[in-house]
Image (cartoon, rainbow over all chains, first blue to last red; front, side, top):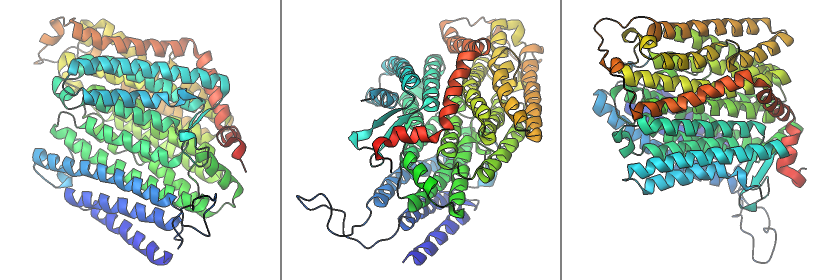
Amino acid sequence: MEPIMAIVVGLLYAAAIYMMLRRSIVKLVIGLMLLSNAANLLIFTSAGMTRGAPPLIPLGSALPDGAVADPLPQALILTAIVIAFGVLAFAVVLIHRAYNIIRTDNLDQMKDTDT
Amino acid sequence: MSFEVALPVIIPLLTGTLCVMLWRYNVIQRVLSIAGSIALLASSIWLFVSVLREGHVVMYMGNWVAPYGITLVADMLSAIMVVLTGMMAVAIAIFSLSSASPSHERFGYYPLMHLLLAGVAGSFLTGDIFNLYVWFEVMLIASFALLILGGERAQMEGAVKYVTLNLLSSAIFLSAIGLLYGITGTLNMADIAVKLGSAEHTGMIDVIAVMFLVAFGIKAAAFPLFFWLPASYHTGPVAVSALFAGLLTKVGVYALFRVFTLIFNQNPDFTHELLLWVAVGTMLTGVLGAAAQFEFRRILSFHIVSQIGYMILGLALFTPLAIIGGVFYIMHHIIVKTNLFLISGITHRLMGTYDLKRLGGMYQARPVLSILFLIPALSLAGIPPLSGFFAKFIIIKAGIEVEAWFVTFIALLVGLLTLYSMIKIWGEVFWKKLPKGVDRAALDEGKTSGSLAVLYVPVVLLAACTLFIGLNGQPIYEFAEFSAAQLLDPDGYIDAVLGGNRP
């Protein structure tokens, strides 16, 4: 399973970076979305994909029965998804406003503040 | 229970929340903003005193003992940074009383400012690497919204770059956390340090170190990752620029200091050598970029970049004296840089422009402001007896001690070029005659009204701090020395955090 996931993660990063290098500002945001998904899957994969029971401890005992899956990466991913959702919502609104004010979606024409 | 560690995070969060609840009442928000900032400063000083007494102050969230729960840790570096955050909060809150326009206030200027401060303080105090990521995001989302308050064309263009590169940095940071978790199986920074210290050193650890370097390098605006900074910092409202200039990049620098002294200290031949060349590039490109600019805030933005280079240089040389210099430099820089941005705001209020070519005659019309400009400007360039001289002196002395001649030469050269930039601003804005065809009504009008006097208050206070550090550097040096000793002794930090749980 890990090799397949590794390839998927790599492809997601590649697609994200490709999209971010395009000139259109909409594609830039799509690239950012893919990038955060790639990072989430990377956490999932690198933490080890173990096939285990849910990490629940039966009533009355101090330890779970047998091997359990590590719940922490999933908590991390959940947090990261929520954060990415909020930030990307902002990014989408920002490009909409930027388009309304600058009247272009071409990043090459947004160079006034560069020099 | 060491409650004081949590207070600098809770107070701005609470102030921000209250301001959101009182959304329509601008006057109450202003009062709350001032009160919250002063409370933040007071609590940060309390924390500082505790750290000075105990060394490390640790608090476990929800009483989940490290390494299982989230830990808040304050060592000397964190405490210094939090005190500076409190000082900047007070300065910016006072400045905003007069500089924030009603339209900014209507769109949540004060709530955002305090959420930003909460994010900054949280980043300084957390002992958990994933929690650091979360605080970074809190800080970022608030800064995004603050940067585009007003919604002008330049702000939109600047914000697109700022948002993109910061999100890229966050994604790299998150990926690095994932890989690090894969190796160590823990998120507590002290625990990670223990696990990596006992594990065999592999190339993978270097890869992760470089990912952290890139992620924090973008946040800190280090070479060659700084391009978003001069493209965006001069676009926002001036009080926001000043706050960003003082605090945001320094969060990146702080994270570099924390990670590269505590976690990635096994292979300094590789990581710190890399940091050294990053520092050289940052110093040079920043100062040369500034030399080409003719816009007040843009020159100052490029100088943020070049000064970041000195701080990273302190970390990269990795000797006790160099770390002392780095910490001292951060203290000096936050105060001076915020002050310069505030002064640019006052000249903008008087003349209505940041363009050096259309400014002038300020020395004749406003001698007090001119002197107030000279103090931070000469301090930035490193003229004795101001604070910048001692900061540069310590770092350059550290460079000579380890015989890093080239780097030391660059540091001296950049100091000289900084002086050139500051003299350029002095000559254009203050010394030369007012250009023909520029309306000088605002200058003559004698706008000594209350609103302008309010703008002067934080500038005078910060200039006094600069003078104090310059004329009375010994206690400040001792604080920096204390924090450097802690940074170079990761075992102290680990013992304080893990306590009895240390394997």
